[in-house]
Image (cartoon, helix red, strand yellow):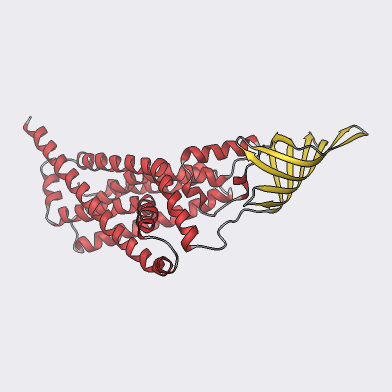
Length: 367
């Protein structure tokens, strides 16, 4: 009973150290990132008609959570290395091991806290950060990046709106949500069965309702062709919305996981293989959370041994490992987006590689 009590006290002690150091690292890194970002954008804040309330609540709350979502695994690694190195320097780790506590048992409180932070990260990534990114990115597009952000096409646009229907639009006005030179082609296999042409079309409302004006319909039945022209407006449903004409490079960041899945389903309904950028974002949000647990094991294995270089050497090794992980993650995103590897495998490659690193380091750790 006494041994169990001591172990429980030890668990609480290590968990308290982990949590306090993690939040301290998070606070310091957040202050540094905010200071750097503010110095970079202060000119835009002064010159543009934005208020202090917008800067704080619309932009910086989203910015802080966005940076946390990107770098939380690195913050965790730094925290583990920092406080574990201090324990090792004070011979506390050595005393714990000499008392008969195995490295595997010592790892338990680390994994508990790491799993809790991973769960927090998972919740932030999938639900909270995309919501606050909406206001953050809207602020940036309004007051910081004022030109060249919208990459959506508005002239000579081709869309596959269903597996057997293609639409061509000569020009689209984003302000009035009207299209000119509409051409809707329906196929049966490789054969065109009908063509609808309209001078213009106007967006009405959800779900994808359009009003087309001055339109004609050609139908084909073998060698026979039928042509009818209509002057009365027609309300019809086309699997196309104004959002299809708008695209920002960082638009995935402001889409919740549910919205990303809806976008994938919309592409599937059009007969398209879903865009890899949506799948990459979904799998990245999940994989990054599990990274925290892996880096926790690596941090303990690296910093748990008392060495001559002390805390400085441990921090250098920890930051080097974190930098290597981030670099490998960037390569993995590129490979997954380009289709060189399956998206799911591509986003989990860094975790798989560093899981083996963690196992190897744990085997070599001080016992």
